[in-house]
Amino acid sequence: MAKVSANMSMSLDGFVSHPTDGIDQLFRWYGNGDVTVRTADPGMTFQVSEASARRLEHGLAEIGAMVYGRRTFDDAGGWIGGHPLGKPVIVVSHSIPDGWPRADTPLTFVTDGVESAIAQARATAGEKTVSVGSADVTQQCINGGLLDELVIDLVPLLLGSGVRFLDNLRDSPRALQGPTVIEGTGVTHLTYTLR
Image (cartoon, rainbow, N blue to C red; front, side):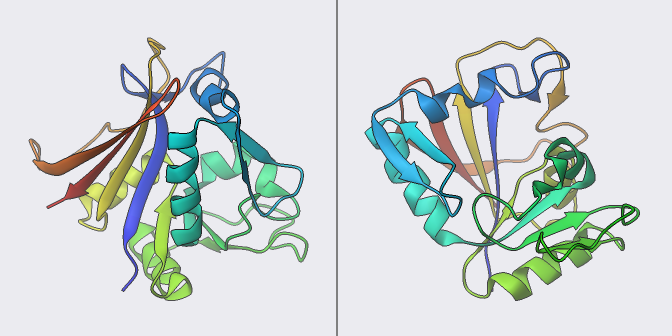
């Protein structure tokens, strides 16, 4: 069965986006090195440190499906033409937006909850990893016992406000195993296993 792994770039004070800056400062590490990492979209490459490149390449090779929330879908403009990583996308939403689904953007909307979305993503991913890329969906997965791994790209930045990555958690405190640590340039990659 596919492993379910949440991955986000996060500020030191726990935010994954800022009301006025969005994600720009959190994602600067994707362009601060001299090693090129290619995605499925020829127009999108990353220029990262060697350590970050190894982590990214391994992660990209392992992803079989991705799960996002509706806010991320809306913020990304629906990934018109398909997600840049070229993987199947499942969007958790209360409703399907007007004009969707679309033939030019292969994604699935799931309106009956995160558990159903993860089940569909696991079926799609096969033996590969299901990557969760939204804060709210990650929180729901942790609360529902659906998450196996937490990958945090920790950026040395204090945002002060915005969307918190690990908010609204039940059954806390909760011990994690790890971390494994990879030190990149301008980012520290931390991987934890949920018990």
